[in-house]
Length: 126
Ligand code: SF4
Ligand code: SF4
Image (tube, rainbow, N blue to C red; front, top):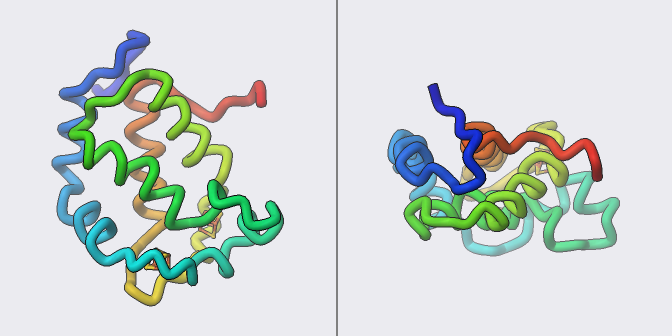
């Protein structure tokens, strides 16, 4: 059962999910060349006048990537910002193309799973 109703993030739960997907996250972080090619294949990025927060690479680097680098040690406010990135800024259409072979939608899906484990879901008030 990976659910947390406490406003303080449950670090061990986050760490255990990160550990399960360590290889995939490390590959994404290591292989990303910050070339921005994935941006052109994301209609949300293209329809938001180039707002970097809609860039596919930004969405995984600043959610799962950041959680991994911080070893799951994040505040509730930081997690809420990640929640907005992975739920509001992506519809998981899987159209983003990365020439390095990074599975961006899979990493964003993982970010959603971590958010859900901390009782953070899509924010319908936005
Ligand atoms: S296309 Fe791939 S390597 Fe380039 S910025 Fe996007 S995720 Fe990174
Ligand atoms: S899966 Fe998300 S990041 Fe990729 S193209 Fe679709 S909306 Fe953009």
